[in-house]
Length: 143
Image (cartoon, rainbow, N blue to C red; front, side, top):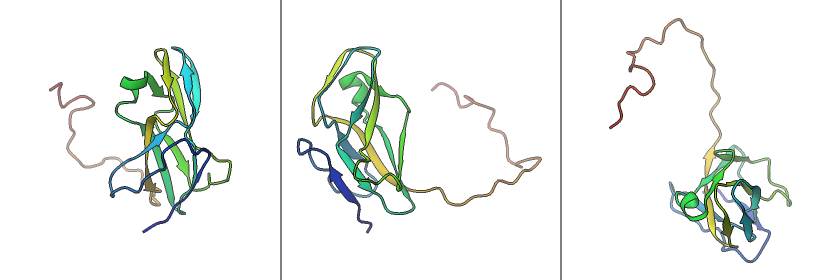
């Protein structure tokens, strides 16, 4: 089992909880944020972590984030590698508001999971892949 050091920047948010393998871990807004439609803000998540060597965190919105708050994550998915582990390396959620919204302290706005880095690979140029074509993009139909 890997152990991860975590530093909190506020006592106002619930602590990150240990989870069963395979689940995503919720992260919370560390401050109240008011956004008008069209505004951008880096929302502090109130934590910094020291990930194990060879691992990274993938941060994405929760499935209810847009429905509840009208915000989207501007970089689609955030990546935090194990070198971002200093005492001031707080994690953030880059939010763009599509409607006026208020996010309260401790609201769950995103989630993360810890993944191993991609294994070492090598690309080999070939004339053919030798596989049957599926029919191109969108070939599986609408249903």
